[in-house]
Image 1 (cartoon, one colour):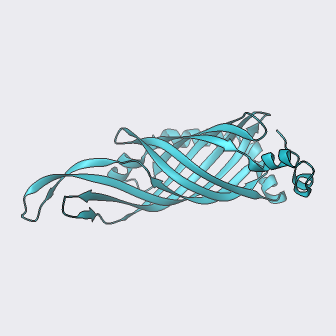
Image 2 (cartoon, rainbow, N blue to C red; image 1 turned 90 degrees about the vertical axis):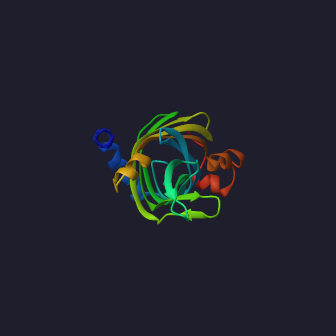
Image 3 (cartoon, helix red, strand yellow; image 1 turned 135 degrees about the vertical axis):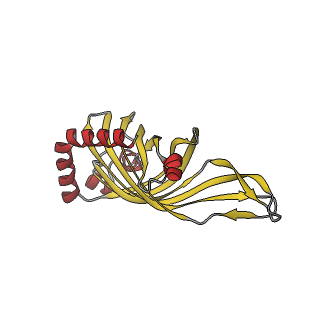
Amino acid sequence: MRFNAIIIFVLLSFFAKGQFLDTFNVFLHSKPSIDARLESRYSFMNNSPTKVSGVRLGLSFKRKLRVGIGYSWLDTPVYDKEIVKDELGKPKIITSFFKFGYVCYYADFVFHKTKRWQLSVPIQVGTGMYWTRYDDGSKITNSKKRLLLFYEPGITVQYKMTRWCGLGLDVCARLALRNTNYVSNKLNSFVLAPKLLIWFDQIFYMAAPKSKITKKHGPAMW
């Protein structure tokens, strides 16, 4: 999976090279706006669907480039059955839950755009901790927290339904950089992130077309 994801990312980067230079020029010569989001990303762990929730805060440069930081956490129970010894040294089966949380750093640049459709390349890198937790009936035990490193190359498809709202979908590959068997088996997966997009600045421009802000930054546009 890792090799295939890298090949896909390299091909996307090759075809997007010209647009990347244009996007970088936008980054250098435009004033940014705030990019704030709540998101859910869906993938598989232990062959079961899981959800990772997160918050994002960053800067958007004419909607051609977004960069920022966020925090994400596992929002679905992921567990294994394990054998441990009780206080008397006798083996017993417990349910061990996998946990993680991480700070993510993201960049998303547009390489194709029409009136309603947009394609972009999102890249996300995460640093955080993972651990396991189990309850044996008498106490809750957490394992030692270990460093978590991964990255997510992918592609985003976006459809603009009106001037102020649209739908989007991220298709990414989550790849653990600390590629131990335990971590890779849990984390390496394709990731889907459906989105409902609302552009509040466009709503303001449409609601207040004669305001000073609209005259300076607007009007609402496709």
